Image (tube, rainbow, N blue to C red):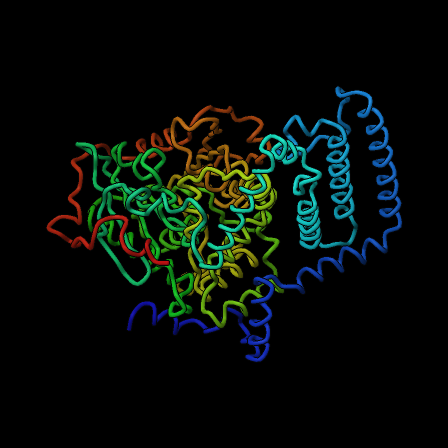
Length: 588
């Protein structure tokens, strides 16, 4: 019997402890198709919790009424001053990350009054949806998020007659921008109907334009291909580097174009690099669980790497959810006395999910029951549904501002390798996706000592190898304070880096990338805890990429330079199965 079949037999077929009624599942599966997998019950419960407690809070109502009247007075006074003076100071400033009204034309009357009124309205609704006593924290965040989404949809920047940038473009081009925008819209609609990628993706072919670092597929099983990259230096560091990317994404986020490929950077610095390429699962893989991903992914890859490079420990690297899985594997290895790891690097990876950012808005019991029903009939979660959820986290920039630029201004955004990778979505098996959402996000089993591997719990505290942890400042998926919590879970030597950028761009931050900066500090074994804000306030800021600092950290934990190991191992332990990037990455 295969390992997959064995593990499927060892666990119940349903992700929940109590199997749901089949009629309920079928009914909710049909409904979930119409809602994109979003539970209407979850939203209604949040709204009811907020609305009922607000109705029962006369003091809060009075404060909101006062704030509303005060904001109206501020706007009226500003409108009068703005009509008489172009140099009139604004009555409210947008948030730092809000660039919708940055153009100077928004300071001209009446658009200055229009956008100031919108910002005051936005601020009032934030006051209305927060600070209502009795509302659960989850429901408060959900209502605040929904209110922000609604307001962003009705921003004056989204409409022709209230957006001075669009009106200026109409005047300058004689209306040609609207024609170009209409053509952009029709092109996008055609691609959507035909299930094609976004405009511009054709210029980034996997294996030709991206994922081009030379290497060989040296191992393949039902779930992964393992790629070993060809050395480019006469000698290499003794310990190989094994990279475990997330299965939510194609692996080549870390091997984009030659100028920003992390894989190529490490190889050129003299590291022997291996990386996992996950299979894009189908309905036939519906019963693959988290334990399958650990065993067939991390552990099989580790077995192959240590066979190809024998008698050497491994510098393990995990990205996003791949880092979480690697941490689970490392904890199980430490518990069982497996000492094959030399160090552990986690890039934008959470191990404590109690404060996991706005992605947690889509994760509660109601939402997961709805999502599981939606996955049940297909056997997987479609990657486009996951991509849509991530877009919602930053809809102002990823949805509305893009539509204004492309459909009203008629300007196509320059397409790049990172955008092409982002459009190359993957699926998630039914069982695995449900398990990681319930056990990691919802129940936080890993951080709280309840996550079991081989029937016994694992603890991050058992990991004693040095760690290098990276968080990114603008991460909507794994907020850096949540990533920082590794300081509370482990007493091992820990180097923490906080880098500019978001979940993807902060990690793909090659040397010579403009406007990049980072902070770095090492906590020695057993040192006292420093809270994240104090750490950020006291740690010096460095200009440039964090990659060189990481590479030097890896080098310091190496036994030295040696002759590059033979591809596929001594005496051909593993036979070549094809050139990189392999076949799994091409699965649609």
